[in-house]
Amino acid sequence: MNRLTRSLFFLVMAFLYIPMVVVVLFSFNHSLHSLIWHGWTWQWYSKLWHDALLAKVTWHSLCLGFSAAFISTVLGAVVSYSLYRYRFFGRRLISGLLIVLIVIPDLVMAIALMILFRSAHVSFGFVTLFLAHVSFCLPFSVMVISNRLSDLNPQLLLAAEDLGASLWQQWWWVMIPAMRSALLVSALLSFMLSFDDVVISFFVSGPNYVTLPLHVYAMAKLGANPEINALCSLLLLLTVAVVLISQRLLGKKT
Amino acid sequence: MKKSLLGLFLLFHAAFAMAKPTLYVYQWINSIPDSVYKQFTKETGVPVDVSYYESNEAMYAKLKGNPSLAYDVVFPSSYFIKRMVKAHLLDHIDSSIMTHTQGIYKKFIHQPFDPNNDYSYPLTWGMTGIAVNDKYIPLSKITAWKDLWSPSYRHQVLWLNDIREPFSVALIRLGYSVNDQNPTHIKQAYALLKKGLPNVKVINADAMESMFIDEDVFLGMAWSPDTYQASQSNPHIHFVIPKGRYPLWLGCMAIPQGSRHPKLAMTLLNFLLRKDISAQIITGMGYAVTNQEAVKSLPISWQEKRFVNPSKSLLARGEIEGDVGDKARQWYEHYWLELRLSV
Image (cartoon, rainbow over all chains, first blue to last red; front, side, top):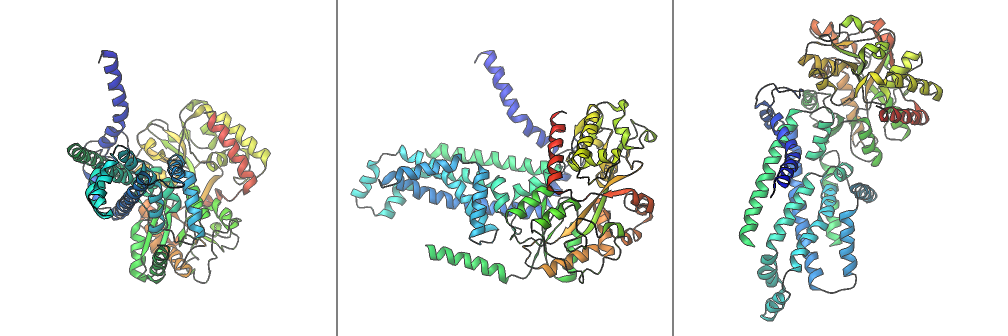
């Protein structure tokens, strides 16, 4: 690297990471409103710890994220497998439609889902959020897993079949080990997509099930609150941990 | 597969219907303290589940998008009530359940936006005035709305980022009503605001408190409860109520159409108006409440505050922000956009 590219590199890195540093720094600021430094404090973290409402909405988001990630990864694996293994009428149409779901604006999907749930008389709450989150995570799962499968030697499955493996055995001994890293990536991606969605959740959530991003959005809109900074810092820590763990897992297995 | 899915839905429906009633409250963030709802649960055994919105528009979008959402209580501003009634979003309130309404200032009930209080009751109220930091600007210098236009405060003034407030101020200066619907008058107000633009440093409402506390701004339009909150952190901040008229807004309570327990919701509305509960709302966030009895039970330091315990003449100067109708609202929005673009 020459000097120009190196300084450019640092500039870009600074641009990307300084905002996060600021958030973390201000989560320790001893002042409720101010953006001026007033000394160190842990009080926002202890306040966060005792905030029952925030705990509840965080729990909601975690439950939703885990269940959406799990189901969309399972469905994603099944869909990818079918697309990979079988040649059937409408196969290309299905993969095309899945890509459309990725590019479609969130807002369109949100309104469409809301109208659908309304006309089906589903009461808005966990069920609607879950269905919505699975439907926007699924295309990403399929993309990640299909991508992995396209590298897979098709002879492997034929060999397994030849050796007398049943469909379940083929899945358990061949497909799942081959897809392991992709399954993990798909689950992580789906969890993250679900965990920070605001637009779609806003339209399909009900009074009894509010998610963390919706609550934070309402909090942040009326004045910066150091409790949010503390929360964001913790989420940042969680994200870094997840990335490190998944990198280690992936590094070992593939 | 289809059948089992259907069964799952029915199960959820049944579980929803059989559960003991919970009241779902949808309210402004930082408005009514949790302790109030805890007390309601203690007295009635009915749990209250609160979720929050940050603007009338967000709440309206949510309810308009799906009027069958099971919210039991919402808190629209006075100028949003008529719009929501017209859109069939609100349920009738049975006045016979509302037994704590006699303490409400006469000025605040039977407003044109809801003449018989069929759909809403006011709970909180506030003034739009001027916040001043006396470290930089002597309080005696700021007495009237026109001072915000004074050439000595070039590039120093904060305007509230809210379509209604700056226009209300301009309309008051022109001698018109804050609810004026005449396009010519609105245009005149726009021209007056445009003349004030060189004085504007920032147009903001969300971060107004911190800007005043950090002394990024010393002068600007302000809401009374926000200014009170700011003055708690920075005692140099004062709330000035300008000479003549000022805009007055009401925080109303209403019951959405989708409420599963409207009778219970009315009990909650009535409970919030009760003297001791309203008093908790004052001390919690510094909001003035419509029940004039409430403030009398508080320590003298609260009774001395003009924005929660106004004199008759002060209250008379306030002009309540009501509905302006769809047509006029479009004019307001049009001119507001032009102002924002020319900052």
